[in-house]
Length: 409
Ligand SMILES: Nc1ncnc2c1ncn2[C@@H]1O[C@H](COP(=O)(O)OP(=O)(O)OP(=O)(O)O)[C@@H](O)[C@H]1O
Ligand SMILES: [Mg+2]
Image (cartoon, rainbow, N blue to C red; front, top):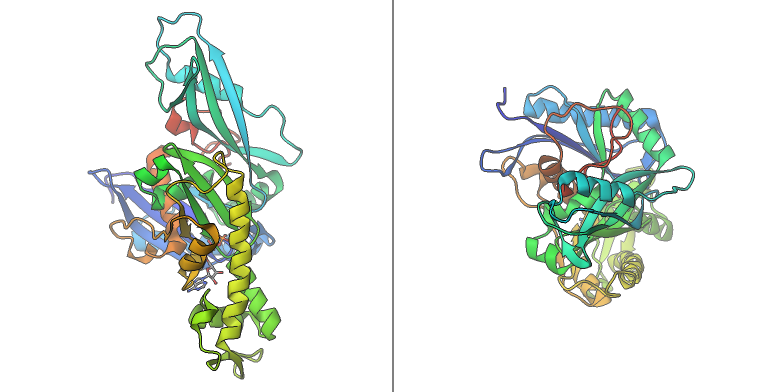
């Protein structure tokens, strides 16, 4: 077997469940040992609607990954997103009565504990408490103050909250699948590890992940995850619009979108026609390809305008300097980058995840969050840590502060 510990992550999406078993190589790089990708069951718009069906799909994904990695299933971090997730900014502080004593990891932990939102709405729970920056005697932008001296330590933090019922349903599905959950990881927090360069993280960039059920916007700034927003629209809405407007079944609409779709209908000749598979699975209806692409374009523009609205709520009130990195399966739509550049105005690129040894199956933007979650787990998860019950405390160091508070049972 392997002489280095393995890490397992499960990226739970509306469209696919992607399990990756990986490990850190001797030179500190990530390596993929096994991948299991199966269609998701029991989830609609990133919301669990059938625990039994989801459990079966999770188990199948884990079986596939374990088989290719030739290891037994191991406890996993589960990457999640969904409309039930929310961010709240919070601050905590502490005073040192002896400035001769340097700040310790315990001081950081205590400042973070003080930053915990005091009241959560009924049905909400804290998933992550992320230290964005430390402020020492009024000096901002310090990432790791351990060993430094100050009278007052403040932490500017971001709390990621999840809907308790959704979290319970997900944990129940994992339990039924026989999967031990090490913790839940908000994908927006992890995706930056998979696609952003250090310069983009420093200068400020948005990762806009357009999956099937939801789109999340993860803002990275000053080298760290800063905040996120969720828009309850994704690729399924494009498919649904095509199905409704053209009177086609979802399967035929999905196939047409992927095969002939582009976000730039003006590039398509008005005389070009395509065949969409009908409800009986054998008949076809002829439609204008330009019409199909106009339906796609209109919904894409609506979605991008919502992204722009959210960008106005960022600290600078506009798009970050390094622009936008588009990820998620919908980022494979031809012409999306160009239309996004027109609507958003800044620099836009498609974010394929960093390539890892053994990770050839994870090459497209749909796997940015999966690869990001694996790298996150290798960086911040304690390898082969036993899952523990209930909620853990707030961790001391900055990296550990990213550790999910909600873990397996
Ligand atoms: N070539 C393509 N053109 C247009 N859309 C595409 C293409 N390839 C994939 N998609 C769309 O990408 C979506 C799936 O993306 P992804 O795999 O990122 O979703 P997910 O992670 O399962 O969902 P979510 O992140 O919302 O939970 C589907 O709606 C699919 O139709
Ligand atoms: Mg996704």
